[in-house]
Length: 111
Image: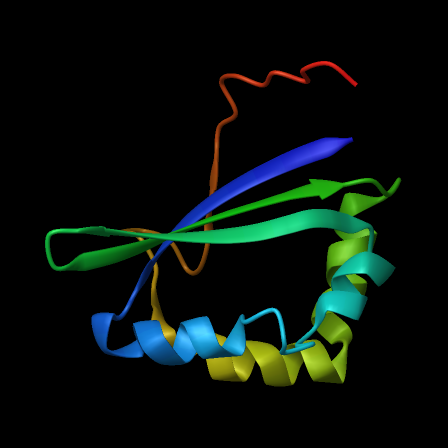
């Protein structure tokens, strides 16, 4: 399994709309994430001063990450979703979108 952590900024004026789009009652693209082997996809928000940051996490359980991400990117409904969400986000300096983070610790815990 591949564990992915990502970070991005969110425009302060978009926080309420971003929360609305990602509410549990909105199906969004949840089925597409599952179709392309992305499990436990979570997004967390945190404010530091006037800046809002997003932390995303998911577990990829497929066998060909690049092919699955390419196929997900080609899905028209995913493209429409990103057209709504991307303008709300502010990539970190030097990035074009979400910045993948280095995993330095993982604790499986008891099963």
